[in-house]
Image (cartoon, rainbow, N blue to C red; front, side, top):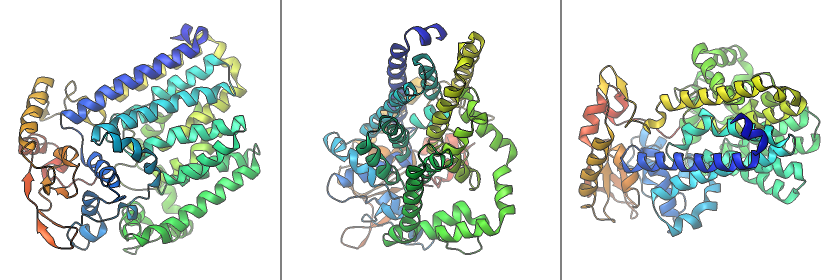
Length: 489
């Protein structure tokens, strides 16, 4: 690898991109067809499926996770608008593609394509600052990052758009393609209500570094205003989820009320800096492992690069000061929002220290770091995508070999084929994605009723559950045993 990077960097990057695309797509498709995809894959597919029929951002699956259902005990509604939970208008970009191939598989292919394409744009961005071999090394770090590989082979998620949009924005800035820069600057906050934090961090870097202070100030002002207006006024027009549920569940340690706006949380943090400091450092071991995992594929350069701390600082800060087991889980979507700033900071650091790359031992050590990152990623069995190789648990042992996975998949397929495509269904979590091409779908056994398009509360036509999986995995994983895990935060 070391010699190829210097002699044929472009060929190396393209070969790496093809390998990344092929392997991650194969694992993702196997995960889906063997019934290891879970609730979020079903939510996004149902959102796209409804959107293809003009019922934009509606989802009965999202309704089941809404504050009206979870906290107020209401019945899930097929006409619930998900924009009250997560404001994701950028997904409309891909609706024409989905309309041609209406399947959860389309979303998996789209996700792998977007993340793979982001690496190719990163290489071009690196070429603006570095010699080709060094730019290829940074790109290799991206493709070998735990925070990239792990989320790629999981459920479809909105953050899969972030690396491509951010790298394109930065490349457009370097090339002075102002039309493309403006389009990406507007689009990035549309990915998700909190993705404006990524744009704010990039603007903060441009402002503090004085590279483009006016552009940086503009990005900061736009992203901050967008977040505050959207979460305080826009999203509550659809539902009260952002204030009554998400703010409290993620930042409830700073507030005493059962409902809080973004401004309330910011004010509470500003007036309680000791709690913020405590959250930043705790749990110490998990925080340190998370940071090391993010830095490892870039040879720990982001740890010493001021540019990386500035460009990725605010998305990282948001994760460190929030609560919940998932915020510091490097294999799920939140980690991907930190990667672009770290990669860009790494490029800028190497621009100031190019002579270090001429040392063979440095290049070999970087290669070792990337291999180690991939080793930790794969042995962690991200999103249970490698459960046919790695046991899900050792005490007690939970392991389902490949032949068993596919035999069970065939049995489940025969059962699900008996359900009419227009029937309302309550299904257990691993079955949800495969049944999500329908208007009325909720999770079993949490609910067996929903509110249909006429406003009437009706019982579902079919209830189906993978009782074998509940029993087998329930010995170790309580969330599966109760089937009440919360994938939406």
